Amino acid sequence: MRVVSGIQPTGGLHLGNLLGAILRWVRMQDEAECLFFLADLHALTVDLDPAELHSNVREMAAALIASGIDPAKSVLFRQSAVPAHSELCWILNGTARMGWLNRMTQWKDKAGKNREGASVALFDYPVLQAADILLYRATHVPVGEDQKQHVELTRDIAIKFNNDFATELFVVPEPFIGGGTTARIMSLRDGKVKMSKSDPSEMSRIHLTDSDDEISQKVRKAKTDPEPLPDNAEALEARPEAKNLVGIYSAVTGESIDRILARFAGQGFGAFKPALADILVALIAPIRGRLDELRREPAELDRILAAGAARAQELGAPVLAGAKAAVGLG
Ligand code: TRP
Image (cartoon, rainbow, N blue to C red):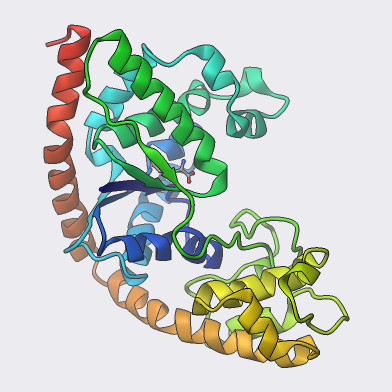
């Protein structure tokens, strides 16, 4: 089992990234050989301030390590430091079809009505993602629901390439959606939209850098409804804000929704919110502390990323060579 996943270096991590992706990665480290990278090439698909991209990469690497990604167990690196990602992407551009990419919902959403004005890189984004995955012959790709289609496209590219060039070079990977907490963490201000760093309201999300007081305050002010908590999970379905808060509790503690509700049924949010704030502070305070330390050691971070890139380069080299040979290059 080989696990590969990436995350875009879009600034500070928030609770949604932590519970939705990072803590799953952390748990997988003991079960499989893992490669995790900062997808800085993917960040070039949209307009971005170069200085910001540069600092985001380090900040994000620090946040991953602070959250429990252990560079001694996992290969942690920045995508652009391993040129094989770009090289393989170009080779796979010969295999991917325009029609396949045109069907990608992320492309349709991000390009919106202005397709003619979108970058070519945004359109090609999923092929680069396929290269990320196929380069390391990943068997499992932990991603959120929104990235599942890209992993399916990766499978299509792998199958067509293997078929067209009569090779077994690429491993056809599985998207890996499950694995413990799959809770989609929603905004604290609106239970119907994802917690996101692009939400203008700071109160909508909890950052790994928030102080204990800020965390408690955001939970206290989180939008809810006036009803007491129900005694079963189904009754939460029509109550997105309540469902989100209970879902966060469950994702942090690993307790089932039903068990949590058994304890809080009939009580209002005045009782539930302080309990939620407590477990969130207990989760985030130590991460914040480690992040603080790591930020003061940029040279150490760079060393870790360089070592990770060297290892990734080594692991990917034979596959890139195989792909070049298969298509008649080199
Ligand atoms: N597209 C992914 C996201 O936005 C990030 C990503 C880039 C990725 N390359 C990847 C995820 C390869 C898994 C495997 O979340």
